[in-house]
Length: 384
Image 1: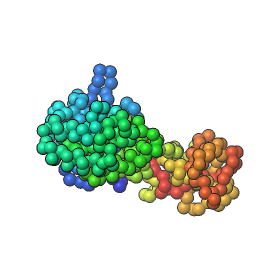
Image 2: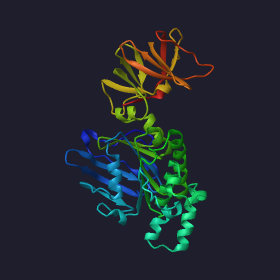
Image 3: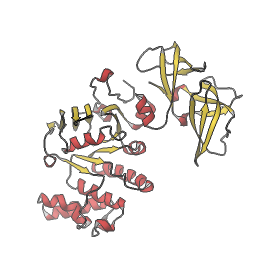
Image 4: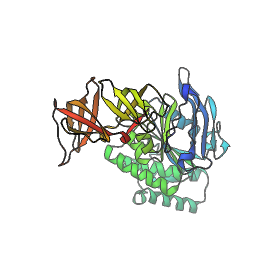
């Protein structure tokens, strides 16, 4: 088990392991997924997934297309029946309950607004169907419209709204019914980059204000890390790791998590000395570096990683700090992208290491073909 709240949840030999809600605050989970499996005719979309989600938590299901995240969301919402396993909401088995019998609402990617209704009428639609008192409808709709920043637009129809405003209407319509859980299926994917970043912050603000559990599906790593209390990384129907954004990023449990959640330099080497706090590793080119011990225990070989932004470059002739690792390489390529530059450094064995370096007035720049020292602190790395 990885320390500090990270929970690698794919067991050895694909044994089922659980992702506890303990790291999200403890106590009985609001949602408990037990061995959740969904098989279609030719493939398994979700395979024995176990996950606890805490009350009031914002959790993201993150992964590439086809990893099973949307299928998992649809099973929680009641739009797909699981092949095996169970879904519990507040201790009650809701596995095969229809969507309208679950205290769960969904915000879809398309928003699914009624084009002929005003903002007020769209938000109030569910309450009117439930025959809620008119005064209460007016109060709740007004409160939600204010919260999502639509108070001045309540008489407009969807075609008169921007994409971001339509997204807010869909969110208010889902929240006005006071669900225990709100499911969000990539609701920001249709927005432009600037508006998407703005809505990420708005969604988190709204979630904190209403205190409703949000389960957010996305393939966007930045989106997941910006908004979430915890991130559940999925691949091929399995949970790879569940933890807070900083833990999952800085202490990935698998190679998939390391490379999917941002860029990572993965290096392999032979363990020549295994100490309690660090291992001495010989790389393919003969260089000796220090690495954190593998969480999998003693081994003759190890894979460890360093994020590009945690490496810095020095002149090849510069003396290294005894507490840092430094290996020599040659600048193969330099890519400028504004606030930073990316350097690709070729090592002795042909491995390429990526380095991100901020462009400041104090930055030392290097050119293609130049010999450099690649430097990083052992504590800034991770081992797999």
